[in-house]
Image 1 (cartoon, rainbow, N blue to C red):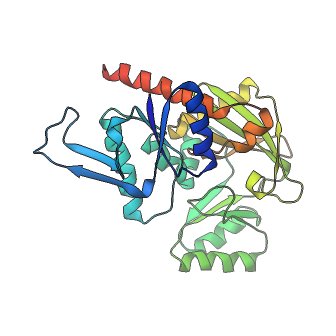
Image 2 (tube, one colour; image 1 turned 120 degrees about the vertical axis):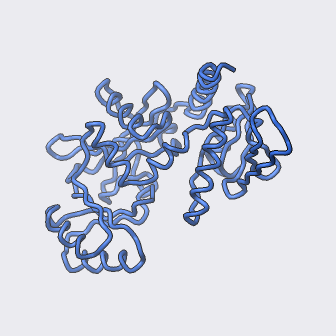
Image 3 (cartoon, rainbow, N blue to C red; image 1 turned 90 degrees about the horizontal axis):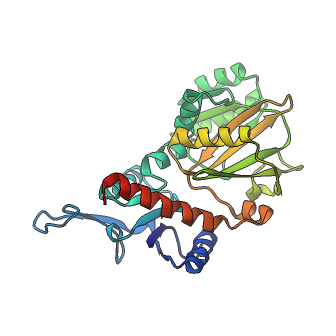
Amino acid sequence: MRMAVLGTSDSWYFRDLARAAQESGRQLVAVPFESLSSSLDPSKRRDRGNLDVRSGEFNLATFDAVIVRTMPPGSLEQVVFRMNALARLELLGIAIVNPPRSLEAAVDKYLTSALLDQAGLPTPRTYVCQTASDAIRAFSLLGGDVVLKPIFGSEGRGIARLQDEALAERAFRMVEQLGGVLYLQEFIAHEGFDLRLLVVGERVLGIRRRNPHDWRTNCSRGATAEPMEVTPDLAGVAQRAAAAVGASVAGVDLLVGRDGTQFVIEVNAVPGWKALASALQVDVARLVLEHVAETVATFRKRRGR
């Protein structure tokens, strides 16, 4: 089975997947997102249509699956083209993990929050707007203690906790001047940890991420990862959150308030697993490849191939 990984060959995640692929006899190739191209030539009739999607020397339509392992920044046009190219591949019969629609949903915090709420999952009170004046009103409505996040972003980058109205107003006006969207959530007081649940198909793995020095609990921010029991209830929440954005491999972040209330904070459709694999001593890359192979089989059966 040949799989293409949208990512760089020097990344830890590609190397981990390549190791697991070699052990299982699968072929894995790294292809960069930035090199995606597509051609449409009606004069060249092919079994799967006239459209090709390539990355460098590789025709992605010749692979059994494409695994998305990165979401590099780009202009609006570049991002839209990349997602459309993946959607075309999917229509050609190539299994994409995760599908482009799930990537679009999970990368957008506003859409993710809306989908989680629609699925009946508990999320913090949230306000999204485009002007500083609206954000200032939301600051008050949310209790004067908010977390300002970039609507696109991950690993805790670019987020800030704002408790002072004057400083909050300055931050809001700066974002407005830059043409950004103001995504505000109420700050949930917690005990210095959150739960990262990794969904891989039907399996859910989990760690507790603890950071006594920072309210942000991302491992990239210095939090330590420790094993935890994934109860059926937690697994159910994680599966529902992943399904809400349409992802079969997803990182679901839960925050437990001091009163014990659980909130789904985020769903990542290109989740990391380095800290989780180390804490649990589990070969996550092998599980991911097995899930991708199962997805290919299901995809082919559904299409009658």
